[in-house]
Image 1 (cartoon, rainbow, N blue to C red):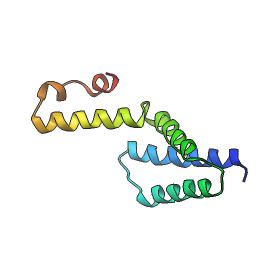
Image 2: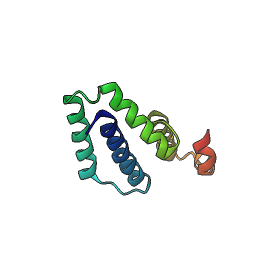
Image 3: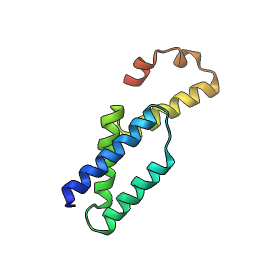
Image 4: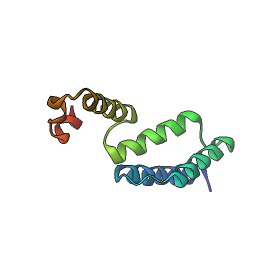
Length: 100
């Protein structure tokens, strides 16, 4: 397996994990397997840490349409709004909340 094949394989595995997450189907075994695969790529010199981060961001964006950090921030805002009982924020349709 050459470097390009390895990266393509990592990307496909990450997309599968993010698609399952999007469907609320957590698969820790698959997640840990991909983490190990990426770590092996780093040890073999096929992937740098920056490459791995970029690959995760690219895969996440492909599935969710937003960066990991943006999604994390949006979810935290929603959680805070629920905790404080902010009905104004909660009553905004999700498609509008997600685009802002």
